[in-house]
Length: 154
Image (cartoon, rainbow, N blue to C red; front, side, top):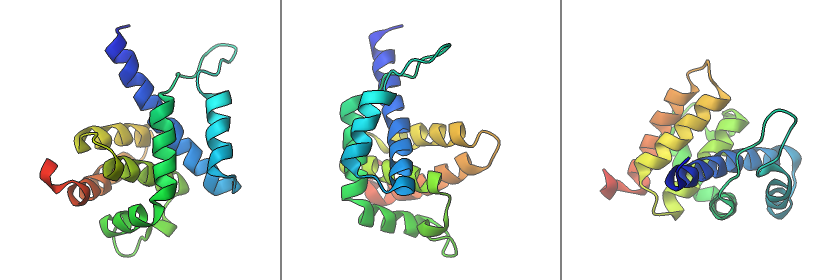
């Protein structure tokens, strides 16, 4: 396995873990600090009998979770503008809400190219909803959000 591939896989894992952490925060009411520490201590590279969880980019993970929390209001407003009027962010699946918050944080608070952010989070949606239409939905919403957040990138 080449080093660049491993680095990319670690970033992908960090994005997945950020979605999981944001979901867990919403469901449990735990603080951002407690969730981040739990993931860093127990989830990154966790080994089970017959498989091992991917090691993640801890810096990216922490930035995504912190920015999703710190910029939740503007990210949620941007997400609402990308959704159909009858489906405000409060009504969508909590996993998708966590995904949009992590992706929105990356779109607005990083230099990552929007197409990379969209592809990564569409892949995460596919992992959570392998049989559904959610990946297409996520693609459309994130495309709209990316065009608002970084219009010069298109």
